[in-house]
Length: 381
Image (cartoon, rainbow, N blue to C red):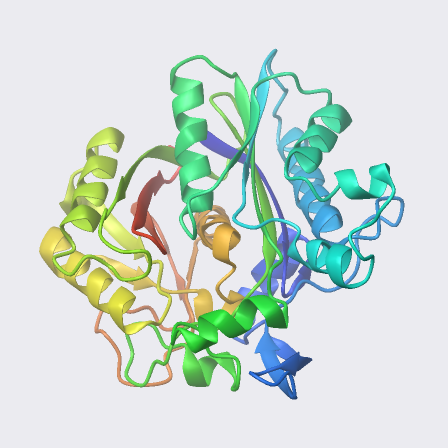
């Protein structure tokens, strides 16, 4: 299976090239927005998706971002030689969906809307809109597995192709939940930081990290067995759950290790063949500890380590989607992109942009509630 097309709407702006240029700049996408903090009385650093998109669509950042990323991915794939098969499926990775409009539904509209305006709040509606727009008739569903959702959607697409359920799959991951009401609980839990520049707060595998900064994104991929000029190969993946706690990682990390082992086995790849560990890299203490142990235990500290959340923000359901897009674009362009190092760091952590990327990448995502996932990518041979 290969990635034949990519579309992206992120805190950097609209389009995959805008995302790529933002990552290459080494500067965080986050900006200051009013109304954050426990009393909603200060500015907060969040990588929010800016207004934009198709003005003929409903006035909803969520709908416009989802449609924009999907349209760009499909157009990109077609331009690169993809021709849709008879059965094209859709997998949409989400956690909470259209949170801003749900908030307004209750606080502004008083729980009353015209049926047409209400329907766009439902997670099924964007899926139906996409299938109708493109004339796709394969299976279509939402996938949710906390911050592993984008990885899980990609692995599910791989299963659909392997089992003949679909000829091609449009995979989309969307999360536009960087509003004060959503950010503050994560800050209170000690996981997120919104009171300073992300590079001051979010330092995965570096000293002084306090947690992650919030981000928003919608990222689309066309995945297929048949493409003329694909970006990267999706070799396989693995999923597991800690079965331990709604927040905390299981302290032995055995389920994380087993998840990655399963992903490597499904891909037919040995651990010593992995060149890059594209980490979840949230910058929290427990995530850093888990992935540092994974790097040592399974990979003997050989692969290079990539962490992108200080730049793009933690985009929740779409976080792995942003990082898969960066890895796939990097294969085509011969660049390995990571956040700049700003403090004493793990010796394998990549500092900014590095030339000459090749070999196997393992993309991990560790979602709250013990949702573990690993996608194995490789260059197109």
